[in-house]
Amino acid sequence: MSARIGVAVMAVLLALYIVLVAQRAWLLLVSGQPIGVAMGVALIVLPLIAAWALWRELSFGLDTQRLARLLEAEHALPTEEVDVRPSGRPDRSQADELFPRYRADVEEHPDDWRAWFRLGLAYDGAGDRPRARQAMRTAIRFEKAQRR
Image (cartoon, rainbow, N blue to C red; front, side, top):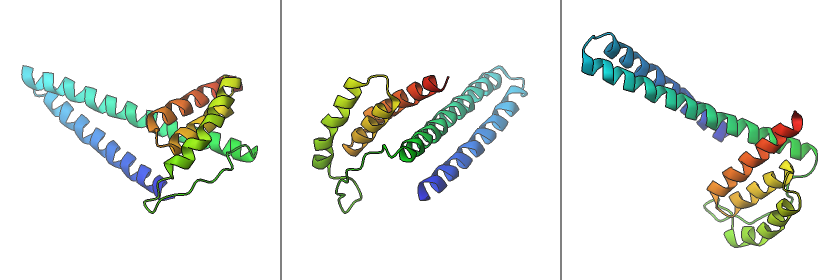
């Protein structure tokens, strides 16, 4: 629950940033001075990039949450428990021991979103966030294609 609150606060702050930068961009655009207009155009691009990044991250979070609920309803989430350190991070050696099983599942079922999602969880447990996110994105893509 605290993660959701954190995400909501950051999203509101980013939205406020977008509005304030867009306001400054408008003021520069209507100034009529060439440098002001150029800076105004540049400031329009930044909020657009920020809005796109915000949308992409929120979509990713909502999609992974939806897939987790689907797997939970199917009783198909991983059941192994990994010890956590006092910091709250998982014991990497235990997570690494589980990883080959989930990688083999993806190799056997390369188009199954469930296998990719579980692999993403294994990557995350092993501390490899970039690969975890990529596996989750693959799971989202396959699940969306399956729904169509």
